[in-house]
Length: 231
Image 1 (cartoon, one colour):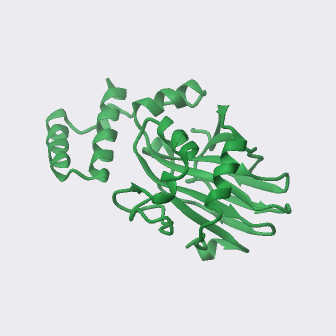
Image 2: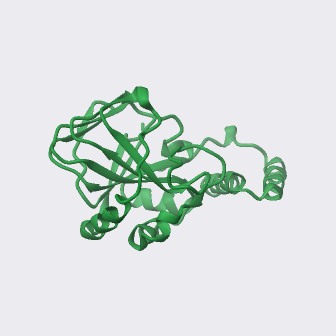
């Protein structure tokens, strides 16, 4: 059984986070596309997106590229670059006072399945309650958390200030395995019986390399990571 959340034992500078957030707040933030999943005001802007536009806030697509907004955020960039893995969508999400994100699941955002979502609170308050798998969490400014969004989760902002998080979607690899393991997360090996044979694996990797896309490279990374953990 894997834990539904993990608080890392390092943190980021909240003043630098908030300073760069202030610059980002000068832009127009689109309303979140999952309108059925919330009441109130939930907005987002992208630092990395499928189209490379900051107003493209969809979290699942093909290849990803940095947006012009990220180029003006050196501290955000340094945090993102410190994660030595493939990144997909990277966004800032803002939940206004009195707003509620209803209980729901985000399929495909679970570390055991090969991808993960990191939350770094930039601005929050004591009235923000994050509930995942029936556990109530308080994520503090500057902290770094992994949350398994395959589990049912919800958020309510009962405070007087908008809650803003930096959210990084990453692809699992050997480097992240070591990081998670060092934080006490149980890294389990997959049964060898479920693995494809070596010859077939090499053929698949060869075909993926010909595609030369971010998605193909992510799949290659996952396959090679599985190979190293099964050894």
